[in-house]
Amino acid sequence: MNKRPLIEVQDIFNLYGDSYRHEFGSSMPRQQHRVMRAVEICRTAELGGHTEKCGSCGKLRTSYNSCRNRHCPKCQFLRKEKWLEERNRDILPIKYFHVVFTIPDILNPLSLRNQKILYNILFRSSAEALRELAGDEKHLGANIGFTGVLHTWGQNLMDHPHVHYIVTGGGLSGNGKKWISSRKSFFLPVKVLSQLFRGKFLFYLRQSYLKDEIKFPGMIEDLHHPDAFTKFMSKLYRKEWVVYLKPPFKNANSVFEYLSRYTHRIAISNSRLIKIENGNVLFKWRDYSDSGKNKEMQLHAHEFIRRFLLHALPNKYVRIRHFGIFSNRFRKESLEKARLILALSTTMVDIPQHSWKQQLLKITGIDIDLCPFCHIGKMEVFQVLIPAHCNSPPRVSL
Image 1: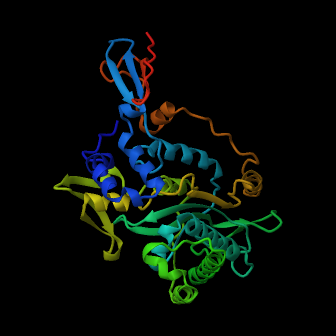
Image 2 (image 1 turned 30 degrees about the vertical axis):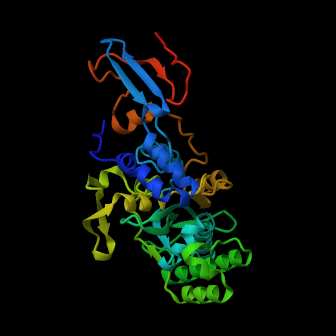
Image 3 (image 1 turned 60 degrees about the vertical axis):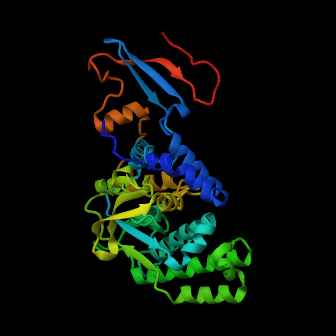
């Protein structure tokens, strides 16, 4: 099994979480409190677990339950692999493009205080821009398929909302009888896509403002006044909005392997942490404004926690979404049409369901049931450990 990092986000929270809550807890949104608590007790006796006994050598091993919070650095690996296995059924033998939509940084204070509304507008406006431009006969004239993943951070952990899309290099014709391919190394005109995205985003933003859905607390209070908001919108219209279109993938098999870097990623992984010293956290980051150079950054523990928690999404917020022929409503029918046109099987293969142990064995070659001591016997549950806050005695299996 992979070696445990010397330092984890959990260690930082356990050392400085109480003092952070004492200073800032009253102003923290509920989801931030939940994330902190989940990370702190992940794989500890607080969540319960079980003790296993080897059927051959008789030695014992205790394992504690995971918190399963989507912001926890420890709980994403198997979830990601399971998701990717299910998505493999969607892959078509065509080229794919990677498109990234980013909102201007002057919107960040507004988006932080209105996460659900602004992130929904980001998804809606970018997805509509892609579908509309791809459906235009002057460009492609096809119904494309694409999967989007919301990220809210930059490498320095500051807020940087953007959406990564993996997009089919072509799509079904309007009548669904033809597959229309894009040009080999060109998908859609980026400048036109950027302008369309900007126009749609600002249209929906103004609608939300007029419906009084947007909140303007604290430092952005002045934006609530109509004159100030109008000036703010004018400034946004004048800015160049960033849409990044990468060259197409080499082959279809590399698409979701590449996407795996983005689907279940969190703001920072434990592997990027270097050390905690004198109340400061040192971590690795990549400075894209300086030719992508690898650097180190030191933050006070409280500032590190603050930045980490900036990316705690609202409860149940869906950050991975499917559109066009990949949308949940039309996926099966659309992909069967595409496969038939592309001379593949007309039915999608059912992906077998695996337990997390089977998934771990498949991905890493590690048999979690094999005794780590004698490497012969199998570990079997000997005792169930109930969560620490429960008073009932543990159930024992002899």
